[in-house]
Amino acid sequence: MSEPETSGINPGQPRPVRLRDALLRARIEAADRTGVVVDLRDAEVARLEILNDALDPLFAQVPDRIDLFDRGISQGDTPRLWVDVVAHIMMGRDKRQYRFVQDTRFGRIVLAESHDTAVIVDAVTDYVARRMIEREHAMVVPPEPKEEVAEQPPRRSRVWPFLFGFILGAAALFGVAVLAVLRSW
Image (cartoon, rainbow, N blue to C red; front, side, top):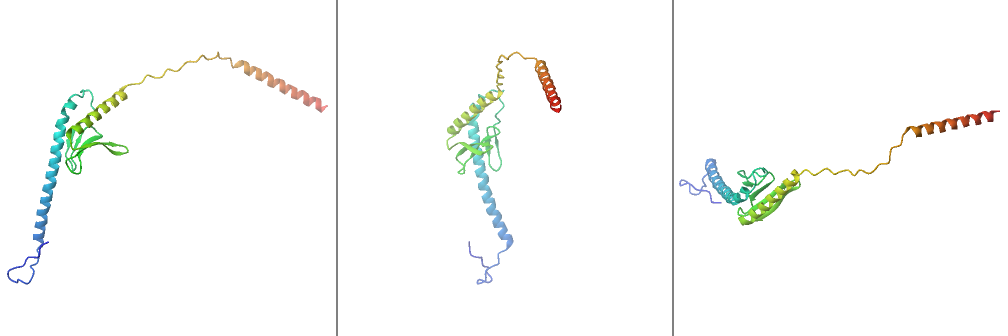
């Protein structure tokens, strides 16, 4: 910090700092910082655009009927190059390193990280291939398993066991009634 300025009238007395001057200095400092942040963000977007151009041959090979991938650069607080809904590339903390990440239900995982564009292009190529295979597996309808038909024994009629039980029960009741009559005599 600098010493307070003095006026020419009273050399021994410090001149009071005016709030307006302090606000002006603070605004100039904030503008300088904002300019640096904007420059960094522009540099991030430029590096992502270079990577996006490097990915053009890969996405040119993806058939038109496969609509899994929606590539584009979003320019928010953190610029990102989106590969699909869950995977994107952003710049690392040093703003020179690419970080290819995927959002999962368990959190974000880093698929690849490098300063080299070719390494990230290879990682995105592998990711696109895996996603296309997953799509193929999801689109295939597995055949329904055929139930093995075991030979069932011929069905017996349910009438005969009922009649047999009815006759046996009637005979038992008749026997109990005969015993009760014989004891009472």
